Image 1 (cartoon, rainbow, N blue to C red):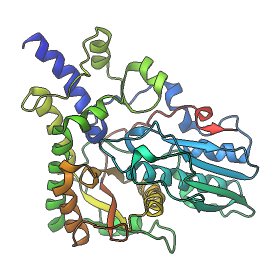
Image 2 (cartoon, rainbow, N blue to C red):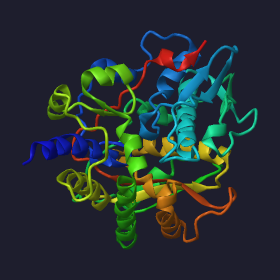
Image 3 (cartoon, helix red, strand yellow):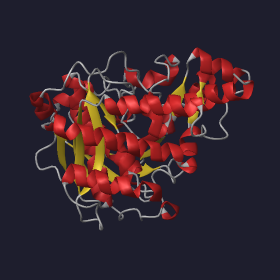
Image 4 (cartoon, rainbow, N blue to C red):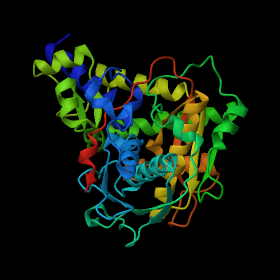
Amino acid sequence: MHRRNFIRLAGGGTIAAATGTLAACGVAGPHYPAEAVEAWQGPVGETEVRRRAVAYAITAPNPHNLQPWVVDLREDGVITLRTDRERVLPHTDPLGRQILIGHGAFLELLVLALAQQGAGSEVQLWPQGPLPEALTAWDDRPVARVTLQPAGQPDPLFAQVLQRRTPKSDFDTARPVAPEVLAALLASQRPGAPLQAGGTVDDARLGPLRALCWESAQVELLTPRTMMESIHLTRVGPSEILRHRDGISLNSPFVRAVAALGMFDRTAPPAEGSAAYESAMGRFEGHSRTAMGFVWIAGGNTRADQVQAGRAYARLQLRATALGVGMHPMSQALQEFAEMAPHYERVHQLVLGRPAPRSADDATVQMFCRIGYPQGEVPATPRRPLAQFVRA
C-alpha cells in the first residue's frame, strides 16, 4: 500500500469511525485516562447541595460531547443555566436545536440530583425569553432558572445516573427487544410531559428505519463541512483527552502511534471510495443494520419544546440503563442543514406519518434512537472538571 494512502486510512478512516455523526462506528478505545472520566465517580468532596447536583448533571448526554453548559450559582438557592456560545455546532446543528436538547438532559439530571438530596425544584425555562433561531444572534440570556424548594421526592431513575452509557457499537442481533421491554422503556416519562415518547420493535417497520439511518449517515459523511466539524472535535491519545476532556476521544494504541509520528490526518475527510471511507461506512452500516428497535421523542419545536425533549431523552436513557438495554441516538436525519432535507422529510413520514414541520407548532421528531443489547463493555465518556462549568 502506498505510504500516503496508508496514513489517510490510519487517520481519516479511524476518525471517520469515531466522530460526531460517525460516533456509532465505535473504534474509540474503552479505557481513557482515569482523571478524564472522574466525573462518573460522583461529586467526591463536594458538600454544597447545588454543586453536588451540578456534579451529577455534567454527566448528561449532549451532542458531540461538547458539554455546552454554564451554571451560575451566585444567587442563593438558585441555579441559573446558560449556554456556552463557543460550544455549538453551526454546520450539523445550524439552529442550535440539538445543543438545547443537551441542556434539557442536563436539567433533568440536575432535578433528579437535587431531589435525591431532599430538595425540590421549580424550573423556569427562558426567564428572559428564548434564544433566537440564528446561532450568530445568541446571547447570554439564561436557558433556565432553577429555584430550590423544600421536600423534594427522590426518583428511582437517579440510581442510573452514574451507570448511564451510550453504546457506539453493533447490537446483538440474536437478542430481540421484547415488546414489553419497549413498553417499560416508554413508561419512563413524567406524567403530563409536554412531549411524547414512542417506539417500535415491529419487524415491518424496522427495515425502512434502518435504511433511513444508513442513508442519512452517508449524507453527513459526504458533506465536507459537517464531517470536518466532527474531525475538529477529535481528541487523540491521553494528553489531548486530558487537556480537553470533551469532544470525541480516541485512545487506541494504533491511533496514538500514528499521531505521535505526526501522521494523523485531520485536514480532510476520507475520500469517497477510499479504503478509509469504506471502512467507516461499513461500521456505520453495521450499526444501522443491527438496530433491534427504535425510540423517538416528538412534539412541538419551540425553544421550550427543544429543552423539554432533552429532559424526556435523559429519562428514556436512564430507564434503558435500568432495563439493561442500549440506547444510541441516530439523529442524522433530524439535522437541519440543507443536504439532509430529503431525509428530514422521510423521518417524519416514517415515524409520525406526516410531513416534516413547517412551523414551530407542527409535530416535530426531536430525538430518534436505535435500541438493542450491546455485545461488550460500553465506556464512560470524558467530562471536563466541575469548576469549568460553575460561576460562583
